[in-house]
Length: 476
Ligand code: NAD
Image 1 (tube, rainbow, N blue to C red):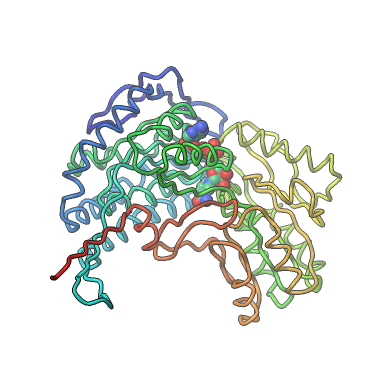
Image 2 (image 1 turned 90 degrees about the vertical axis):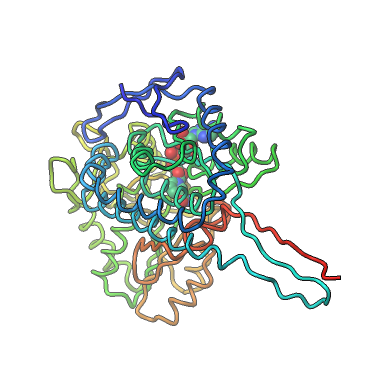
C-alpha cells in the first residue's frame, strides 16, 4: 500500500473508500495499491493551497523561476526511475517514455524563463486621453484545480503545473487513478526543493475525488484534460460557480496525404500518428485521407508497415508499441473491433486483441470507411486507423473538417504552397506539415470545436493562469 497524497507539504495516507490498483498493462496484473483521498482530504488540500497563496504570489518572479529550474533539474536526476515507471504503468516503449520525460523537463525550463520575464510585462499603457496614466498588472488567477488523464501523466501535469506556479498560483493536482504513482514525483521534487508547504498539493482518487475537486467552491479556476463526457461535467461545475475553466478534450484528427508524397515517408508519418502510445493520444491522426492517385500504392505498404510493428512488453522486449494502458481501454477498443465487424468494414490489418496476457491489440487499418461509421466519427483512443480516399484539395479539406472535434491535423505534400493553404483551412488548433506529433513548448496546444476551450503551452499557457488588472490614475 502506497502513501500517495501530498497535502500541505506532508505525505498522508488516503482516507477515502476506494482502493486503487496500479497495474502493469503488459501483464494485466497489479503491482501497487493505494487508498483514494477522501472528500475531507480534498478540502484540506484546497485549504492548504488557499493559505499558501498570499505568500507564494508575492514571491519574486525570479524566485519562482529558480524553483521551476529546480523541478527541471531534479526530473533529470530521477531519469531512469521515471522512465521505468512510465514503461511499467503506461506500457510505453522506452524511447517514448524518454520523450515524455524530456518534454516535462523542457516545460519547466521554458516557464522558468517566462517567469523571469514577468516583471517586464507589468508596464504602462499609453492612453490617447490626457490627464490619466494606466499600468498593467498580470496577477495569478489564484487557487487552481488541475485534473489530468493517464496517457501522458508526466507531460500533461507539467503543462499545467509549470505555468501555474510561474504565474504565482497555488495548485491541487488530481492525477488519473490509472497512473497515480507517476505524478508523485512532483510532490517528491517539491519536498526536495523546499517549495513552501501548500503551494503544490496532490490528491489521488477516482471520479469521486475528481468531482470533489472540480465542484469545490474554494477554487478560482479549474484546468482539466480528459474525456468530453467528464469535461462537460467539469464545465457545469465551473458554470455553477461562474469561474474560468480550461478544457483539453478529445480528438479525431485527420492526416491528409496528397499524391505527390514520397510513399515510404508518408507511411512512416501515418504509422507514427496512430501507433505512438498505442494510439492513446488525444492528437492521434486516426482518420487517414489519401488522394486517389496514391491510394492503391500506399494502402498495401501501410498495411505491411502496421503488421510489421513489434508489439510487446516494453520492459522485457524490443518493441515499437506496448499494450493499452488499462483493461477498460482494452475492452473499449475491442468493442470498436466488434462494431467494425457488424458494420462490415474492410479490415486490412489487425482488428483483434492479441492472444497473450496483458492488454494488447494489433495495430489496425480499415479501408474505405463510410463517413457515417462510428469508427470514422468517434474517438477510439487506440491504434485503430480508418482510411478514406479523396479526389481534390477542396474535398480533403471538407472531409477533414467534417468532425465535431478540432484538435490537430497533419498535411503531407511535396507542394508546400498547397500544404500551407490546406493548413490554413483546417479547423483545428495545431497543424503539422510533413511531420508528425511534433510538439514544442513555445507553440500552443489545444483545440477548436469539441476538442476544448483555451490553450496550453507557449505564452498562452501562462496567460491561462493569469488575471489582467489595470491601475488607472487621474493626474489632476
Ligand atoms: P477521463 O475524462 O475519464 O478522466 C480524466 C480525469 O478526470 C481523471 O483524473 C479522472 O479520475 C477524472 N474524473 C473522472 N470523473 C470525474 C468527474 N466526474 N469529475 C471530475 N473529474 C473526474 O479521461 P481519461 O480516460 O483519463 O483520458 C482520456 C481522454 O483524455 C481522451 O478523451 C483524450 O482525448 C483526452 N485527452 C486530451 C488531451 C488534450 O490535450 N486535448 C490530452 C490527453 C488526453
